[in-house]
View: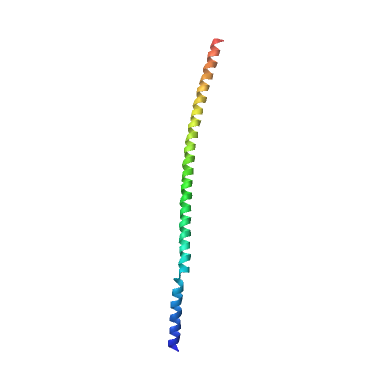
Length: 93
């Protein structure tokens, strides 16, 4: 009887080991690896898109700063011309 019980337990253990290494188990592992790879690729793509967007915004910012500086320069030049015209008109009168 003891031999019979030990044989049954050994058979059950070997069957459980076989069932864990079935293609079904590896299929779910393959799916999870595939899913992880897809998620990683999407994250990499999103990081690259964000990086590109930041670079574009920084470029736009530098262009706007240049335009603001040019506008300030033109405004100052117009102010000087207006001031000179007022001084000249005051001298003539």
